[in-house]
Length: 157
Image (cartoon, rainbow, N blue to C red; front, top):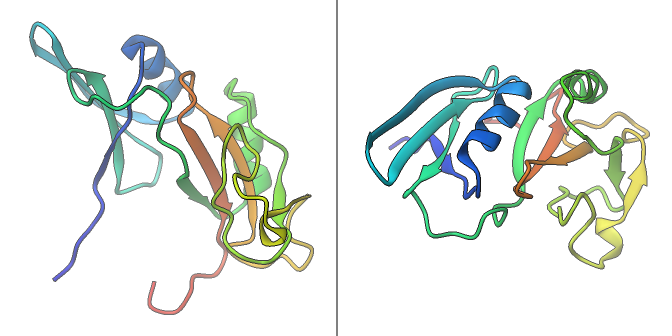
């Protein structure tokens, strides 16, 4: 059985502000529907992705900004960061982790664990390892995104 992650619901405080942010970031608007008062769904897809995000009114009781560690995979971290900056999105500097493990912290772009393996070191991974270079950004509510450079996939991916 295949199980594909298709959609992540993001809690936001201002639907129109979030929609404008994600469109500015280059996400494609798929749906913006409000068939009844008190309910609205805005569905967007990152460029090249099979998975999408959705936010709106009446969709979730989660606290705005509470979703962290959403990964956007890129093949060139510097180019992706530059494009987002050119689109007006505040993105952290590129970094790599201190222990060679997958970065999973965010909290405003900083590691959430005080572990040596989670130290943020400046720049791309010195050996250019796939899965090892990152940059972070947040939407206007603080939902946290991680850009991760993958140039060669793990076997079976």
